[in-house]
Each structure stands twice: as C-alpha cells, then as structure tokens.
Image (tube, rainbow, N blue to C red):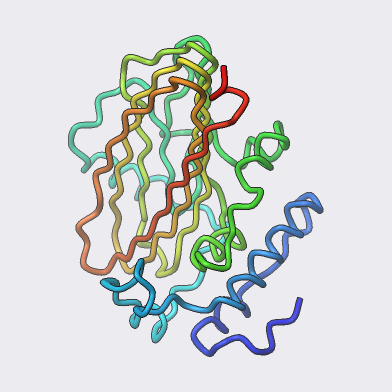
Length: 255
C-alpha cells in the first residue's frame, strides 16, 4: 500500500494505523484498502458541496487520532449514562468510546425475530453478515467513511426477521468517557426483513475533546419500516460526523 503522496493533514492518521494480528485476512485487507482510499482522497474540502458549511481546520491542524481498542472505565461510563434523561426502554445497547459495553446494555428481552448485538460479535460469530455491512462502504468520494473503514473498533448490528415488530424503542447510546482525546469510529448495520417494523433511538453524549465518526448501513426489505430519532451532543469540544446509507435488496423489494 503506497501512501507516499498523502497530504500532511492525513499523515498522522496513516502513521497511527496498526494491523491487528487476530483479525481475519479479508477484514485486514479491507482496512488497508480503506486506508489507501483515505490517503488518496485526503481531508474533504469546502469546495465540495457536501462539505461547504463544515469547518475541518481544527481536525487538520490538531489531529484527533483513533482511540483504538482501549477499555473504558466502567464507573465513569455509568456516571455518564445516569446523566441522560429519558432512557426508559427495556431494549438498549451502550457504546463507550466506540465499543459496546455489555454490562450496561439490555438485549435479552427483544421480541421474537429481533436481534441486537455488537459488530465485534458479528465479526466472530456471523462473518457473512459483517462482510455485508463492510463490503463496498468505503468510497474515495467519502474520505471519512474510508477512514472509518480503516479504524472502526466496534458498532452495533440490529436485525429484524420478515414480519418482526418491536413496539418499544430500541435505544443505542453512544458515550465518550473523556479519558483520552481522540477519534471514535463505529461501523453499524440495521437490516430489516420484509414487513418488519422497528423504532430506533440513538443518543450521543460525552466529556473531553473527541471526534465521533460513525457509519451506519441500512438494508430495508420490502415494506420494512424504520422509525428513527437522534439526540445529538451539544458539547463544545466534540466533533461529529455520521453517514447513513440505505439499500433495498432487489430480491426483497420485488417480492
């Protein structure tokens, strides 16, 4: 992978990349390709329509490098969670510093046909599903998605079988513990079968200086319905960027 011509603003991120020896070969290759695409594209410019109103100079001048695989302090994360108002659903997945925290999550009592877990679990137990979530997502025209593909540490996978219905909201809580300044990259997937109905609520909060870079793939079967809401963070030292990509499988759409 040649990154010799990469711009100065991307060089710290390229230098921070470390391949994980325990990951499958297909994932390691995908990460390297994503990093190559990020190096080729560089930081987005305000000359592009999608980035015209977003000031990225702080990220370029004072890089927030990936926080990596470090474990967050559970006490600090629990305290942050307690500060969030309105969390009352029995179905919840908590991510702290880009990684799922099973101890603070509640996924056991989901309705029949609905599954919720971490992307890390999917990579180990259901690699074919994880590959669907990751394949082809990085794009040279979307450099932060490519950066995400190289550095994501975890994410969530929410599946609903055809006809499955969840009447209560499913809460996804993203927390930044503030233990270290850095960037948090999650890669997630929502896959709804034909005629299923899901209510998804995502909330974001945190302490310290951080950059959140999330990519969520949505795959909706015919007449699959997703009601979604987002409660964004209002923190002066936080930077957030997210992308949602909707795909409707042709086989299901035709049915």
